[in-house]
Length: 135
Image 1: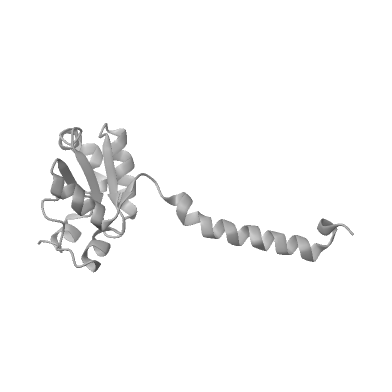
Image 2: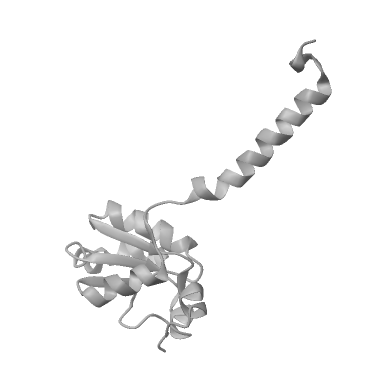
């Protein structure tokens, strides 16, 4: 009896492979280095860290991490002179949920920033941990 000659077995193997792939997909999507809120706090407290908030100005105005610089992701090409200043520092990119900041971290790395991180969960996760946002 050949296992793969039975159509039902093939269907079960395909279903198992598909569900495994769906479970791995979020892990494979993760780009760059992510920091937890605790790791970000420790890095900020050590100094030599720049927080780049990549949200739109309206989102930034609703509340942001203390000392954050607002450079919206779509303005990166036009604000390279500002980004150049961050090359010698640790850079933490922040957005609302952590998706745009992962893209920003990739772009900041390509721009020459050596130590670039993305805040996991973004400003939403930061605030949910009881950490302050300033307006």
